[in-house]
Length: 143
Image 1 (cartoon, rainbow, N blue to C red):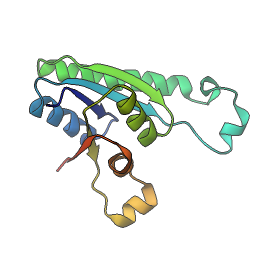
Image 2 (cartoon, rainbow, N blue to C red):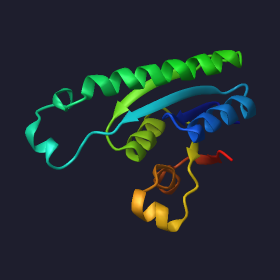
Image 3 (cartoon, rainbow, N blue to C red):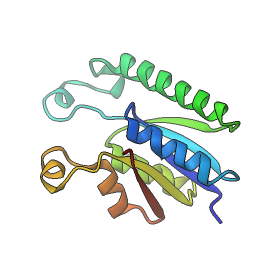
């Protein structure tokens, strides 16, 4: 039985579809929505002492909080309460790490459904989560 679900959220229709799927298909499960703020690498990383020093850090956290507030409201419209969390780092890594550390039974993640060439050019958080997560991962495509 699925008791704990993690739903990664960004501002895409695919993430919204994943949340709606989790809310509809697992009415008894506890759901946590996670948003990962990806930190710049390379040049910028060499000049900052902490993540608070990255340009745009405060705006990214404000945007994350707004996004998760909208997510809570969407869940509330479905008569559900959900938890939220904001992490910083590489999205796929942080999603899986949070799931493992919090005994999540299942991750429900949205995907753009890009073909092979698109994944090679843009990467795929959902694909990486599927490959590395030790628990069940449900991938939801928004049609």
